[in-house]
Amino acid sequence: MIEGWCVWLTGLPGSGKSTVAKALHQKLKKNEIHAQILSSDGLRKAITPDPKYTDEERDIVYKAISYIAKLLTKNSVNVIIDATGNRRRYRDKAREEMKNFMEVYLICPLSVCMERESKRIDTSQAPRGIYEKALKGKSKVPGFGAPYEEPLNPELKLNTERLNPDACVKRIFDLIVKKKT
Image 1 (tube, rainbow, N blue to C red):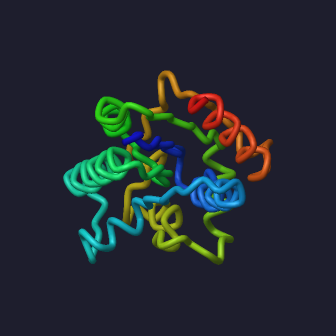
Image 2: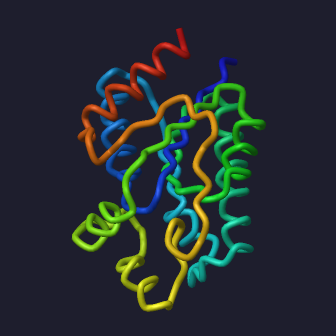
Image 3: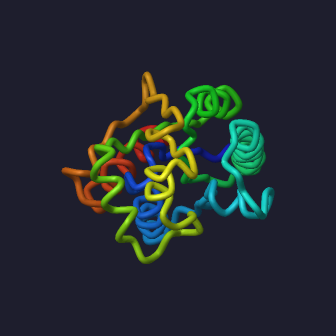
């Protein structure tokens, strides 16, 4: 059995992870490559229906994401992880557990992320107004009150302030094809 691959899209909330994940999924589908999107926001709602975004809760959610992705890839399912993964250890653990792991860092200035988040209509299961709540001291958001540890050696770094989602998808798709051939 051939193991699947895993691409973890990481970056600050509002950096474009969900948009890029959905567009990548569509491109893969058009090329007859099956993949499953694993969203931290979707999983969090299943595991913690009333999320608090504590460090302990984040540890649980990211361990679950890595475990599910590992099971899927071992069973020949390709995985796109759409998750901030604010601590490097979360993404490093996934890399250790999966043979065909790729990390893609979506770089975007905090101010742009905050602007995008305030205007988005489709939240892709993410809570609304996260930066607004953080500004009022009611929550901690990675990059604003909670740490975000940038990847040290991602396979790709993509600036989503400069690159549109299609350009990001093209580069990620090319990475996948290169790694799998």
